[in-house]
Amino acid sequence: GAAAAAEDAAAHVGRRVKRRALRWWSLPARYRRVKRKWKEVRAYGERVQAALEATASVLERVHGLVLGLDPVASALAVAALALALGLGACMGPVRLCQLGALWLLRPPVLRRPLAPPACVAQRLPAWHASPQALCEGKHS
Image (cartoon, rainbow, N blue to C red; front, side, top):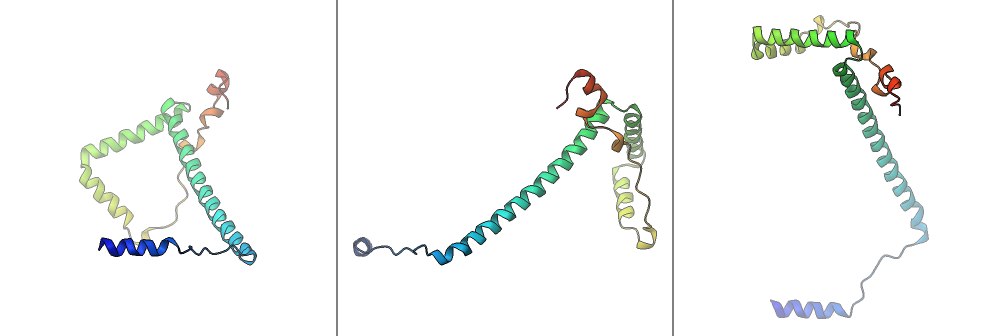
């Protein structure tokens, strides 16, 4: 037990640990490997940055709806929320979920391509580009 472990440790004390020497011919392969990894990290960072920019854009539009920068868009958003609330009160949440599932699972024949819906939030400027922010002198 303990005596054997002490004996093994004593045998290893005098022995030198072999290390792989850094050879000059292995440097290009290591450089290519590090360069490839760095490229992968940069690509991942770019994907994360694009996702964050898209999220920030959506949140700026929601912020504009809440602030009422475009009265028409804000009124349409309030009307849409009131309609959804009214449907939810009349039909119940279970029935609304069932209708939503039927809509998603409709047959391909009924899935004809439609023109993209006119999203009123697309018209909203970013907060830092809005006339109100420019008048107040809050530009970035």
